[in-house]
Amino acid sequence: MLDAVIIGAGPSGLAASLSLSGWRPHYVANCTVESDVLEQKLQKHLESSPDGLITDSDIPDLAKGLRGRSNNPQALLFDALQHPGVDLGWSSPSCLELRHDPSAALTHVLVDPNPPGGSWHAMHEATNTLSPGPWMEFPAPAPSLAAHLGSAEAAAERQPRSTVAQYLEMVAGWFGLTAHYRSDRVSSVTYWDDGWTVAMAGSPPVRARSLVLAVGASGKPRRLGVEGEDLPFVAHRCVEPEGNASSVLVVGAGLSAADCIVHHLNKGRKVVHAFRGEVSATKIASKFGGQGAAGFYSEYHSLSRAMAHSDSTNLLGGQYEALQNSELRAIGSDGTCRVELPREQLSREVRVDAVAVLVGMEPDLQFLPDEVLAALKEQKPIDVHDGVTSTHPVFVEVDPFSCEAAAWPGLYALGPLRGDNFMRFAIHDAHGAAAAIAARAITEDS
Ligand SMILES: Cc1cc2nc3c(=O)[nH]c(=O)nc-3n(C[C@H](O)[C@H](O)[C@H](O)COP(=O)(O)OP(=O)(O)OC[C@H]3O[C@@H](n4cnc5c(N)ncnc54)[C@H](O)[C@@H]3O)c2cc1C
Image 1 (tube, rainbow, N blue to C red):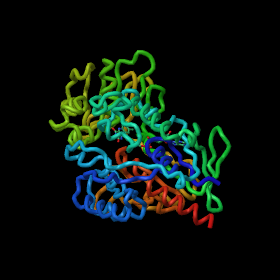
Image 2: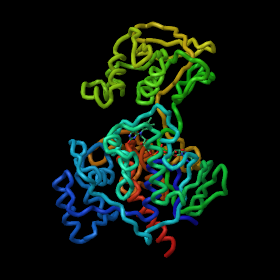
Image 3: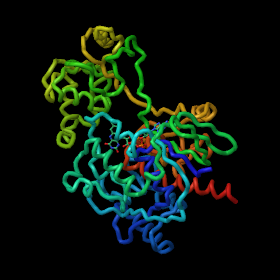
Image 4: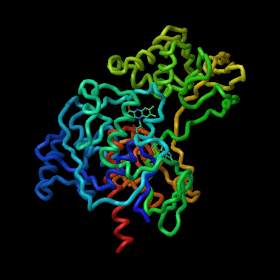
């Protein structure tokens, strides 16, 4: 029996495979972090652990009191080490280094139909990161993005999704994680006698003591449940429409919708944009509407401005029209869409060649056994740790350090599943998980 099966080879799954391969986090001596309190604790830590190794039992104390853009203390600690002061504009060297301890390696496989890098191989080609490049990097000794691109200036920018995908694949190869990788999709999982049997679409099943869910949060697009939603020109991800489509209705006002709108406008198309609520309440406007976003996020900023006007306007190479406070009610087979504007008590018909319904995603965990899904549903996911609210939805409630599901021992949920979408934070989850998985293995062997 293996120690673990990791489902998903995106950033979270790769980080889990790294930890399970025995790569362990170390504080680099004499390196400055942002928090003075943390700095003092780290100096004291070096007295008992001169090589700087941070074990799972050190993490809660070192992380205590840290605040930042995650509600997870473990993620905050390692982010504070990897990117000291980054939210204050510092560009200081990383104080975090992974070092290999082959004796800590655990047996595992990493399963994903996508190549190592996960969803970054599958996103729409037009997707650019929100984050500057260095936030998408693994800690040293992983090669930096600057080394990968051959230029620090290029690495500091937002990155096309293909660059992130190539970088992550290169990191997986560099650390030898491809030896654990299986190109396959997990079709079902059963739990029996303290172990998981994981069935895959294209290879024989494997059995493991622990199951690590690293499937991300974009497995299942949400649907509106309106008439015509299954018509062939209606998509629930941003896709290139068939034929010579010149007009697209995009529904939703999150980041996927924004990327899709920008893509179609750049192709010279007409985009009709329907979204619920006031412009100011949308993610696009609240994140990118301010003048501060005009430089780094210029396309989202221009879009957020245009969303506030109802007239059709030239934007980013195409024609754009916003239907704010609106709801798509039906899609006809000829492309005529009925959109209601409840506030004005109006109904409008718009005729388009394609429709993109981009109203959110959720994880697809249907491969789990019914009893596990039922236990996960019964939990009331908490999104506040230590007074800090999660930045993203929490789908699986976990212990903040081991990432073990509160509802099912031996089941671990990483990154977006436990409420942290940003790669910068998600890649640190697995240190605690690896320690917990090792402890389960030792208990069983003894
Ligand atoms: C459009 C978009 C833009 C984003 N931009 C940023 C950004 O700029 N910065 C940032 O930090 N984050 C960004 N994110 C968030 C993103 O979630 C994280 O960067 C990161 O990819 C999360 O890593 P993950 O490994 O947890 O999940 P993912 O990268 O989503 O990988 C999950 C993997 O699990 C696999 N999987 C699912 N089900 C199965 C199964 N049954 N069997 C086998 N494998 C399975 C999938 O194939 C997928 O490859 C963005 C996300 C999206 C959708």
